[in-house]
Amino acid sequence: MDIHNQITYDGSVTREGKKLEAFTLKLSTKEDPKARIKIKKAIGKGQAYFDNQAGWLVLSTLTDRTDVEGTAEGHAYSTKCEQTITLKLVDGN
Image (cartoon, rainbow, N blue to C red):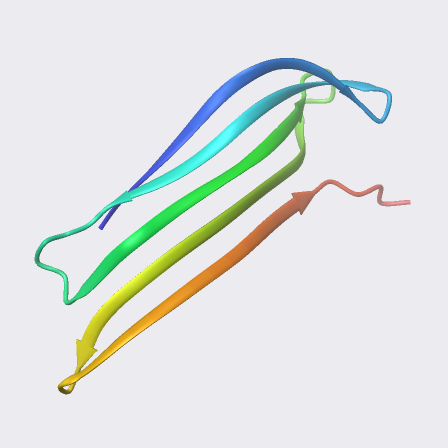
């Protein structure tokens, strides 16, 4: 399976009184025809905010949904998984 991450710059925004650079995140996959499982759907989307002045990522959120089908020992199965990953810079004080 090939996983492709696309990051698009959306411009400057103000969040919590700070000027940040905003990005849209998109995740897509391409199925490997030789794989024993079939990826029926795999999509991901999210946002990221970068503080140019401080030089670090302030917040990143990515929600990923994957639908999979396959067989194991003659039994068919299907599964759906959705997860959200959030990274946030917190004040260490």
